[in-house]
Image (cartoon, rainbow, N blue to C red; front, top):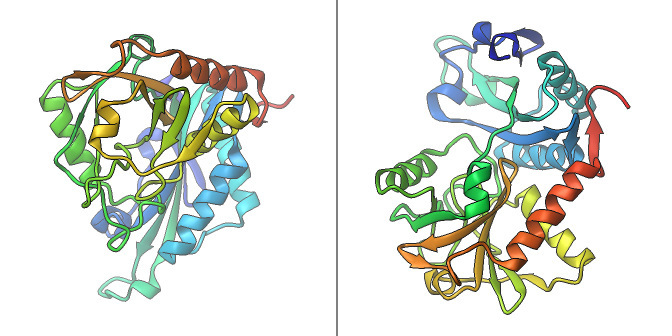
Length: 296
């Protein structure tokens, strides 16, 4: 399958091994660009409009123009997914600042680049890890303050995320969690965080990417009578939680059973996490909120 994957790059659909951008592109040189990830499941892209809206907002905040109209981009995403032939897929749309004219450093003269690639569905935690529950640590790498680069912008500038992930891997953890400069829980590299206490859901309100899966959990909670709200939390609140779970396009709902060597609850995925997991994947399987890739 990987040999047949196609990538859209600046107006062309090319085999993945032929996809390229300029080495002078500021997306490569500086991490100057934004992106958004969505996924297809059973041939339907989940909440495509919400992802496109978030991409538009990231671009506006970063002052990068979208090279094509948003409805044309929707068609490009669908066409790239069709050409790859994947019914369950991880889809990444990237817009970089582009490259300035040769010999110039005038950032206002850049022409943005647009890339869309599609690969088989990506899991942060593998299905068997989700079933058993993951192990996490709180990394010493702090989250990026909004005063420097607001995490609401889904930016390519993610070295702090990579350093956090590496710290976790070196200590044998599945994932890492991040605090802000004041010690409040924010998010992890590529996912949001929920705490369950006395049957209610709590999620950090600030210093995070406003995840589409996170928003879906709040919608499911409201639909099924589960109390849920934003709340500032510290590491203590993670340790003292009845349950903790993560949310991401790459894996959906992912329970944690250990943080910093401390068992969460009884050390097994809890009933609320499991219920949310079931509701989320029932929604995905139903095709509701899904845009058909192959017609129908």
